[in-house]
Length: 88
Image 1 (tube, rainbow, N blue to C red):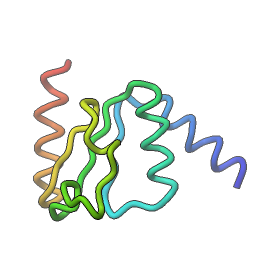
Image 2: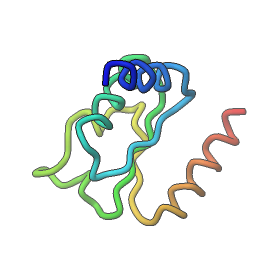
Image 3: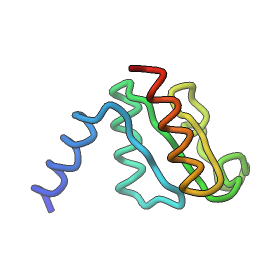
């Protein structure tokens, strides 16, 4: 487990951005926190509008470095592709 954790942490540190798919487990939220702490862009996606539901959301989901998305995975891929192309 220690070695897996080491590789997962380094993968987040080496990434240009991360994508978190909700509902996400504790490991995903730890990666989310590492990415935020490192100033990386986070794409947060939910198939529904749980991101804006006061009972299920987190304050961290609403920071400016978090790009929220809901809908299908295909819609998410399209949004990320368009956004990343504007940064290159």
